[in-house]
Length: 133
Ligand code: NI
View 1 (cartoon, rainbow, N blue to C red):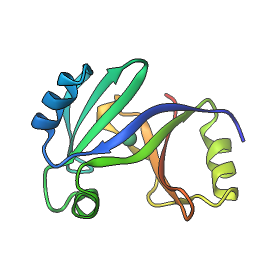
View 2 (tube, rainbow, N blue to C red):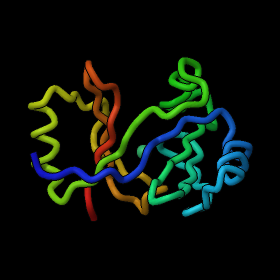
View 3 (tube, rainbow, N blue to C red):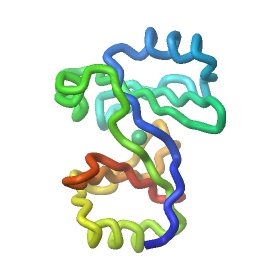
View 4 (cartoon, rainbow, N blue to C red):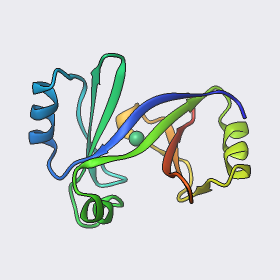
């Protein structure tokens, strides 16, 4: 499998503003201001601390793809996102490893329009893979 590098940890939150305030109180800094992702119907904000990058994701509609997850998980980390120099090879290798895509590669407005795909594994849960631009 081509090398995967952790890009961010996706963190589901009920409300974006109080979550940003509270992460800031813990010493996180805003990397990118909140962006409304009109594809996923979610507000997204990137924060950084100690070399770690956290992506806050908060559904802004009951029609959001993450709304159901919020009901199940409340506020919590729910995916790790990886970047790879070779998207197609990594995607194929992950499929071989037992990861099933749950959508097709779709642009992520909060990541400058880079395509991302979400995959799940029975023994691991959800990951996200970024296609480099
Ligand atoms: Ni993500």
